[in-house]
Amino acid sequence: MGKTLVYPKKESNTANRYKHRATYDLAAIHSIINSSQVLHVSFNPGPSDPFPAILPMIGQMASFDYPSAGIGEPLDCYLHGYVSSRIMNLARASEGDGLPICVAASRVDGLILSLTPNSHSYNYRSAILHGYAKLVTDEAEKLWAMEVITNSVLADRWKHSRIPPDKAEMSSTVILKVKVVDGSGKIRDGGVSDERKDTENAEVTDRVWTGVVPVWETFGQPVPSSSNKVEGVPEYVTSYVASMNAQNRDYAESAVGIPLPKEEKH
Amino acid sequence: MGKTLVYPKKESNTANRYKHRATYDLAAIHSIINSSQVLHVSFNPGPSDPFPAILPMIGQMASFDYPSAGIGEPLDCYLHGYVSSRIMNLARASEGDGLPICVAASRVDGLILSLTPNSHSYNYRSAILHGYAKLVTDEAEKLWAMEVITNSVLADRWKHSRIPPDKAEMSSTVILKVKVVDGSGKIRDGGVSDERKDTENAEVTDRVWTGVVPVWETFGQPVPSSSNKVEGVPEYVTSYVASMNAQNRDYAESAVGIPLPKEEKH
Image (cartoon, rainbow over all chains, first blue to last red; front, side, top):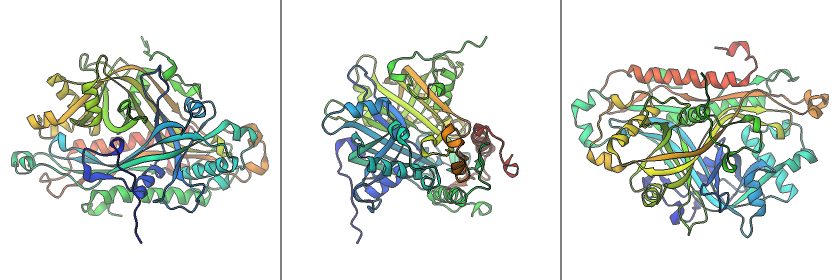
């Protein structure tokens, strides 16, 4: 009955700007992470380097111990990488809880074109997680995480590819498991918002067009490789492409929150 | 005659995986940054916090001192933010060179569906920069950076909005200027790449469809706000939307590197 889990608010994850757009809700944050094709993962390379590093990685929130856990329940973040990459070496060498990292995901859903440059904005969804990363050493958990991550790129792809990975493939791939300590998200939707000093100034409103340009990610028609031997694009591929296109476009257009021009409604 | 500038290779920005995809070329790296709607900016909040932070921000590479500098010449990274945000407070309080930060941008251009999960990949473009961030204090440089950043959201928007920003707007907005120390990029394009053990295994190739799904960002039809008083969508908006859509789609489809199915060519 609707008990919503939220991440604890700490200094490190608490919004101090546009608080009304902030969310600490597990379901909202996990959904943003899991629907993002790329996660940006930050870590500190070591005491001799003043700069934090950022790696683009593929990952998913899921629970190996409770595989039926819903998106709003406590989940771990699994990240996919190469055995000898720097982040994997650091995580392997880390002591105690693991390597402290930050995971971020952001999607732009629209351009908000307001009267003044200062009130310009995006419709967007963004999320961050802080947590401690360790290498997954249990082979069953690693294989399961590889399947979850592969299927996040394209639903059901794992079982339609050549599996299981062989020994060399298993050892060249490393999965990081992030125990999440806190997280937060921000969601901006809706239309243009300007201040009265401008909306009541006819010189400005007569001249400046305001509105929203929806933005979404489109998947094109699948192109078979020159070595492909399978006739026709499989249904699980075409239906994934079609459903992502509909879902992405619907989200961006609904986020505008104002009626779309007739010819464009779908 | 075509002298290409590159960032110095240091431990912190040198690829040790897929080296052939790596670039240190200023033009390539700056182009990825400047064509990204969102940059992920990482910094360390302070000694009491073990986790690096990541903020999604809007920014552009440009040169105030040499405004005619090309994309392949040394440029600074300008980031837009709010006066009292944590990163701005840290940059304001930073001593010496400024706040050490990492700036990252990534775009997905296609899903690479290979025979085995391990050879799955994305076509993508990613870039990172390391540098020292300081607040822009010169008012002329700040105003110029605000214009550059606004126009990166939608070309020519600045001069079509209510400008200049008033005193309150100027003081609530802060621009970070990042003096870049090093940078690197990675670009993956082309088709599927599998190992011979699989490509020569008919049991696998007869069963597993391989190919590329191009991915690009689409801008929808502009939706006027309910308070908009300007008739029709201005030409600079519609032409930006049209050119971005053509450019994004062309890139993703060309990146595939194999002929597209006839009905889809454009």
